[in-house]
Amino acid sequence: MPAFDLPWEDLKRYRPEPLEPADFDEFWHDTLKEAARAEVLVSAHPVATGLRLTETFDVTFRGFGGDPVRAWYSRPAGADDPLPAVVEYAGYGRGRGLPHERLTWVNAGYAHLLMDNRGQGDQYGNGGATPDPHATATGGPGPAVRGLLSPRDYHYRRLVTDAVRAVSAVRALPGVDGSRVAAVGNSQGGGLALAVAGLVPDLAALLVTAPFLCDVRRALDLTDASPYGEITAYLSVHRGAERAAYDTLSYLEGVSFARRAHAPAHFGVGLRDTVCPPSGAYGAFNRYAELSGADPRKEIHAYPFNGHEGGEAVHVRRQLDWLKAVSGFS
Image 1 (cartoon, rainbow, N blue to C red):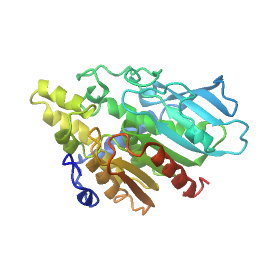
Image 2 (image 1 turned 180 degrees about the vertical axis):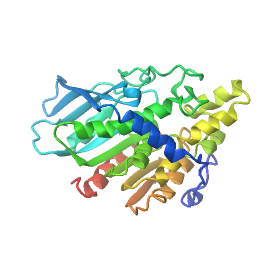
Image 3 (image 1 turned 90 degrees about the vertical axis):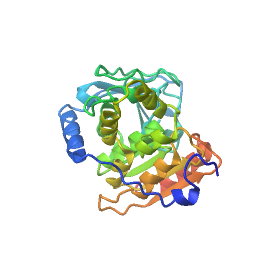
């Protein structure tokens, strides 16, 4: 194994103690309570995609601060019964793209909501449609450092809130069985899905690969690859801001969200991942649900010779098989 991170046998036992702020739960309770004051669903309009077997809607829902957040909602054409739903979160620098890009979950027979990333979409893929009107606090230009010196101003406070609200939004859409909702994501999307699992107690399933913002302090010591590298670059200029930055990041720690989760969980990780180090994924997996009182089914699949790409299509097939076996998703 490469010396980048811990040996695999050590990763399997790795259980980091997250540096949680005393008001972690209060912070998120208050943040989500404030967001819930607004009715979640704004609109859902059918769009032409050129696809005969899928129907798609352009959805707008209210996220953090009541801000409009865009999403694509897709269903198998002609499906009548309320369907289980998959809420998917996109990776760093991506937006929701075009509605025909992500068809795996809808082709498997699920309703599918793909959330746009506010203030992102300009680095990869085919763009986004959701601005971030609150991106005015001190911090660098990239999402990972916007508002980094205050947890209330940080970009990811807003993005995690949007992600939780996306679950409420899909439950408000026609043709969805709200008791059967899964959160899915890779990289930044995996970090968001993991946060949702920790903040939505009745989530039915979680599928996460290479999650960002897990065991953050260790990740910052291990890698200079973006997005973590944006944080270290910022701190290399703003010397002495480490304490404030670490305090902010402690409210977004994926291991802390994982500890509070209830849902059955499926993880994936590439052991040569220098973008989101594998110790973060194992740290979240090994501490998953330890505070919630739940004992959910969980499993993790490691790919020893893969990096951030992980198992790609091989892993997606494992996800499909696993979700089908979760109660209510067959």
